Length: 135
Image (tube, rainbow, N blue to C red; front, side, top):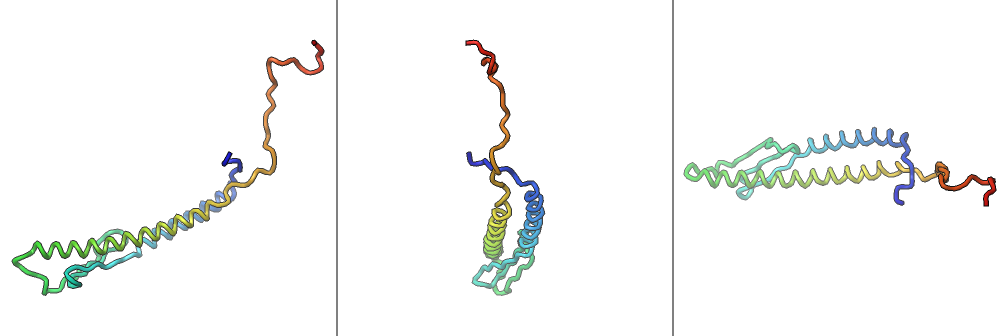
């Protein structure tokens, strides 16, 4: 059986505290992420936060054509998409690191059996008690 060990509840409590710290750090790390994506050969720059918000948008006036607003929109969207893709990659890396930390935190929660566990002895109801003769 793969689950022959018992759970060490003292270690579990300590590791739960470690887990809380790890999760808090991951949340802070994700909030601190920012990435900038570019469109129109670098003439448009969009910066996106780890929470997915556009926090900065810079557009060179040379790409603004009042007669073609659709192209400008497409270039802005391309810049934002590029930034969001980078944010997602960084977020994935942070979460992956957390997963590796969780593996370390969870290791060792099971302690090997110190010996045979207590096994209740249930008498066989159909058998005769020993030493009663009969036979």
